[in-house]
Length: 274
Length: 223
Image 1 (cartoon, rainbow over the protein chains, first blue to last red):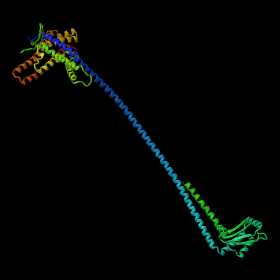
Image 2 (image 1 turned 135 degrees about the horizontal axis):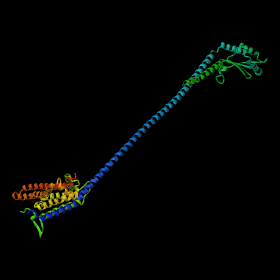
Image 3 (image 1 turned 180 degrees about the vertical axis):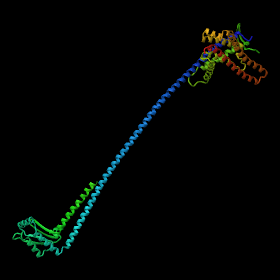
Image 4 (image 1 turned 30 degrees about the vertical axis):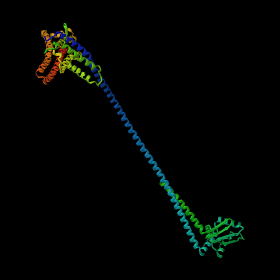
């Protein structure tokens, strides 16, 4: 007999027990664990997806921030550049202004120095010219010139204007001392007579005329042209003289006034031009 | 030389007798249950798992996959029955590599017991799924004329299941015994390998057929 029914029943029971045991110890735990794992992985994937989405969002946000920062930086940089440029322009302008002022001042200084120099040169020149003139005249002062000088003096005395005449007359009348006529050369008797005759009308009746010849170089060493090369009449507070020096002095004064006027005019024209 | 392990009586008391088939089955059961228990005691649902757990998971998910491919929507419900059928037969065949071992599936009593359990389980699953009358109605499909044929097919397929497994397993052991007598070297080893392959294939066939029957009983007429 191939089939033993007791064994069949026993094996049937064995099999059912095995089914129950394996279900209890194998399938259930394994399936449960697999489900759990699957769930966990799904959760993780979802989480990862969510995190990815969030990361993308964050990334976008940061990119935006970044671009904003970049823009801001650009703006600031541009502004700084513009500021620096304007500052540079300002400084340059300032420097230019300073330069201009300095140059103007320098020019002014130079001009004034030049003017001073030229004035000095002119003055010196003028002095030299007059010195030479004076020297020439002194050298030329021979007898004929002396005669002429005496004649001119006499004529001037004779041809005094009314006011001057009266003044001189008053002075002569009031003086208790004799009238002194000084000259740089010795007057001849004719010349003395001519002067005396010219003074006769103005002198008091007992009036005396003293003639003095002084040396050309004065005792005190000062350049007193008045007595050097002319004739002088002094009385009580009144003085009348004729000399080459007087002419030269007049001329010198005129020349000096012209020289002084010239730089001022130049300055004026410059200012107008500037 | 005995034809069946049923004939090797270890202990006897009246009607009750403990033969080699039952004893070997117990040993196999013990090994399977203790092995499962040892491995599933420290299960981890994390991504990193032990090799043993990995092996069991591969087996269980493989069985699950096979059941699903047959057309059963909820394989978890039937995996205990179908999976145990497959694992028991496969483990019994696998142990043929142990010298002196006789597979309990080489006994017609064991294969008959397995076939009977399928014969009983199929209508039970069917009734659970479709209700009592709903299941009985499936015997009248497509027409009532088919009723006797359906009943006959139910019985014959159970018989076929039992005989097929028995024949294959028994023949393997038998051929091995005969060859051992004729040529004791090398050739029996090849036959052991062949027997192993045949055992695995039979386990697969038995499991698949049981699944098909269950699927037919539970899913037919649903679609």
